[in-house]
Image (cartoon, rainbow, N blue to C red):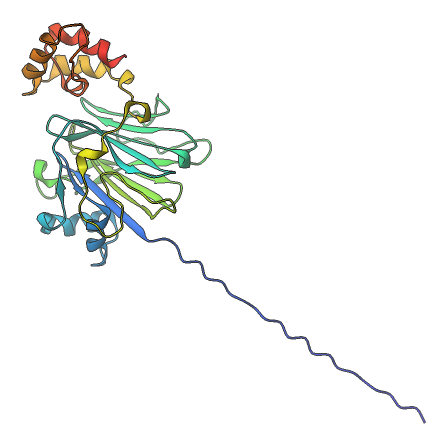
Length: 290
């Protein structure tokens, strides 16, 4: 007699699912001359379900006093400063946004710069891109940035009325950063920024996104060594200002230059950027090239 024994082995497989929670998405808006809706102020709008830049603007526009911080000064300021991402704005006159520059390690040292003064001028590392509006999309060889013109009816209705169409630039950047830069007219740009909260934190005129609505706007002037909007690039703009503009600060800045003593002592670089009487244009250019 032969006996056969059969052994059955059961294997149990356990599957573990790990969910990754993305950092909070935050937004910031600057518009006008300028007014800033900080990350913390914009959070109140996002909590109402307004998530696109146009939706946020429409909600803010219904009750701007509830959301905005007003800042009126000229010069270069940090809108956003973080270990990876840098966004700077140049304010002129009483504070209108004339230029915006984006850079930092997340762009691997590259700089994307948008200017709307006498005309719209856009550069990537100083080289002109998107030469005309409307125009073809721009993307760099490394795939870091995608930029294209769009047409919008929001951003600064104070100037052209509700429903007026304005050119805008839509940017898609690394780290889930999105920007819309609305350009209704010269030196009245409105940058809209949406991104994830950064691991190393964020600061600047857009704030910390840590629940504090109060931001010291004047504190965030850009030191020259950190500038993405280098004064060395401005002589042409200074000459253009002399020829085309008659700012109410022109005569005051010219008097200061005349009373300054030496060729450059006492000259206010920001007021040089705004414009000066023609006889002082050479002094302005010398300062801006230092």
